[in-house]
Picture 1 (cartoon, rainbow, N blue to C red):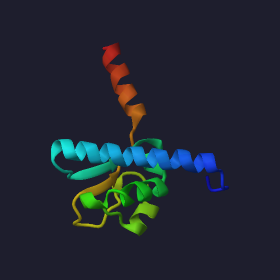
Picture 2: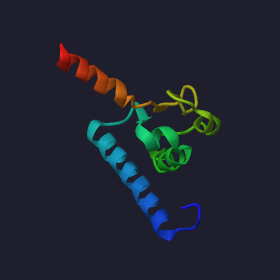
Picture 3: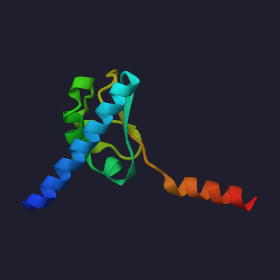
Picture 4: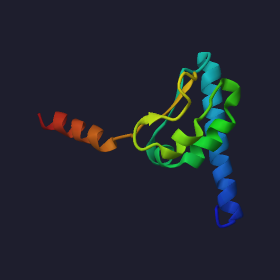
Length: 107
């Protein structure tokens, strides 16, 4: 996408749009939002994805802290302090979940 590939840009824009519409639909169904959590490979590693996604969710009160969004390492809040909903990044830690299930099976 950064190299100017039109198809890559379109794919990214569709991805962001689908995240935004899914979040908005869930908020409508449950009557609001207390927090928005980004996890998994893209959610953890891409400040751009978080920025672009949250930009379309401002009507829900979603805001990012520019500096903390770009400097976040691991788990942490990437929205300004005191802002609701909070925007968080959480490492998925699938390896720990798999290990827990294996340990239970071996007992």
